[in-house]
Image (cartoon, rainbow, N blue to C red; front, side, top):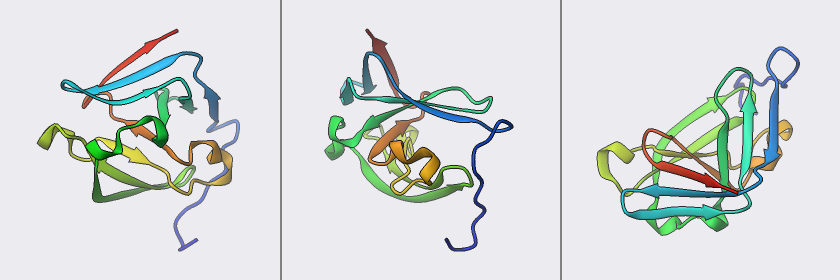
Length: 123
């Protein structure tokens, strides 16, 4: 670790990662960016739940790696991707490529800002 803050989820700031029982389709305009039956739901403290889709179920050719990065003390360092929709899709996707142990299940997954894509779920 490079001196960045690190915290372990606890009862004051819980994080639960669970398989999503159903299908998740992510669309950006008329393009299907991801289609998965293997998505995970991450629920962190009082934040809205976030869907994490395996990269294997995403069309990575539609995404462009961004130089943007952020750090979460509970999850680790996030890298970002731009969506094909232009300015609105800038940094619209994030990924914890080497997350902290407490959320190791989200490694190899992508999360999408819901205001930049359409997220459909079905059984």
